[in-house]
Length: 603
Image 1 (cartoon, rainbow, N blue to C red):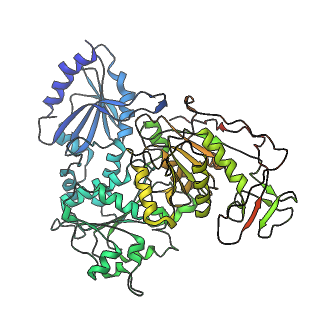
Image 2: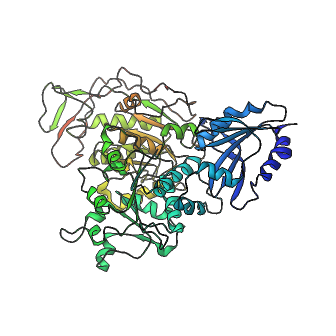
């Protein structure tokens, strides 16, 4: 008797006899997909993890069952059963061949044969021995999955469950750490959905719906969240904006879900910030997006907002594991109730792998010689200018032109690309160089998106994020696009400025990790030795070297010219900097481009 027959004739009836799928609120999920399988390139994935059975009661996954054929040994599936239960953070798991049942308690380590499957109520009481009224109320509210068209991923279920558990235990500060691109806004939505429909609020009595605040530090993040919460009633959603406040003469208070940015709350007439117009206990629950970026920083004015609304339960969302440059975040919120790393996401197949191309030239460092033409400023003789100086202290047009020429020659110019530059002026210069070298005939092929570009820049970003649009294809930026760019089809990230912070490095890498059909990997073009971050013990994802794409191109080294090319300098900035021109440019001793060898650790 094969496995399918064993399941149909013995396992399914045994589950039914125990009440699974019979008792109201109980479900049996068959062939439950846990992971998608890591993307391996050329349209292939590794084998996904699929559980034979997952037992669900009151919207909680309570057990996993691994089934084997009738003539297999009873414990043949034990290792798989344990692996799946650990992945799903489920306490009880079972292996069976239809003739017997072998049970494992993942919490106590106790295992052995059991006479029958526990009923839904028995398994619930085993899992949740301590009674908690709010946990029971939360469990009544199912996930909002748009009628099954938007199912949650296993780690999202765990994240929501951990937050709801912390809230049921009256914890005032909660932290979630999940890699960029894993759906933190989706998780926040599901948490708010459960709070809204269970009528949780600070009184801890289900007497009214909660008032929930989603707080970000960028308008694009607040707008994305506002749109992601569209399943709520329209009159429940409120976007708090300065113009609207000034027009009405007061802050909005009618609603259940409020979305704004720190800067709006900190502004206001005179010395009175707008957040002070709300009572300290007005909000029951506050979500702080990208909380490592200042919201919990002791030296930040934003901290005043969080302290003012101290009565509210506050949930911090971050993509950055604990390290020395964000310990303040962890000191404020405490240790995360759940962590899902970049490495986890790539290995599970929910994030796209990446490869790295290091690029070196003879002008990665520069010492002035009398042969070079000093256009502006005062230069120090014999001073060695390094990467951190370029485009901030010293500008060399030939250097930037060569770098743009190199990456434009290697990328597929039809693929969406982000270029990170040293300053807004540098981003402007690189934009112009890209448009001068592009193959495309569209004048809007490359656009700059920085703080100085205002609403026009925001429109360029929206067009770039639209997967149905191909223009603009490339964006240049300085700081602005390191977070908040939810564009799934980014294939190239070009680093033309130093990335000194691991937090920022992870955010930038995260711009390319989102899944998209036909996207096997994305490529990081590293001009600034940012690849050294991969050696940091805090780094949790490794580059790969997939099969080369047919469209990959190699640019031959440029010969050292006998006569230096004479070019007029480009005025990149208005303020005075050192500007040098007529500097020859060639490739250095390193190859033009090579991939960092992966140091893959065991999953």
